[in-house]
Length: 170
Image 1 (tube, rainbow, N blue to C red):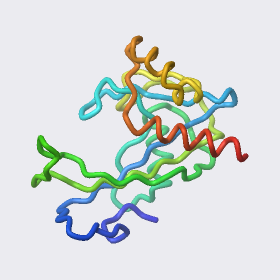
Image 2 (image 1 turned 120 degrees about the vertical axis):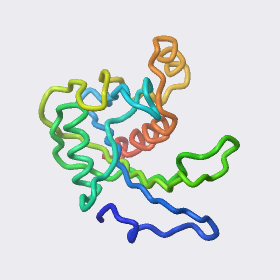
Image 3 (image 1 turned 120 degrees about the horizontal axis):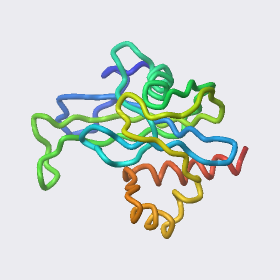
Image 4 (image 1 turned 60 degrees about the horizontal axis):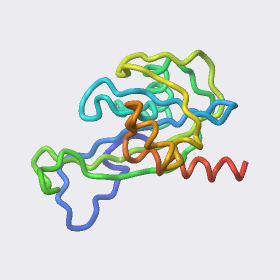
């Protein structure tokens, strides 16, 4: 599927003027650690997340996932597996109201179990680190990470829980 407005149904009754498409890649090593990057730019500057970003025109979600992983971490993905697809409104006014700048973001989350290269912060990343998947899904350990200045993007924990369930089935 390509990243295009034609591939997305607009929710009934919601006047969405803009649609955007992005990817996020949960790269998992053989020690069940996931790669996190520290975002360098707004809107999530300073937060830790899976590598990812916007789809370019004409690019499939899969192609965008491979490109973004390489651009932000220097890793080359083998096969990407779809984990989930999220949709949410961005650029809302205070109080959660839509504005002329609001858009519907479709984010396709992939996971990658095989890759080549050595992880290093690049492109839109200030830093990168491998963190145990179990650490990300444990509330107490996440609080410890936050004390160390590792604040996670909100949706990352839900994706980590889902990835953990997938791995128990492999």
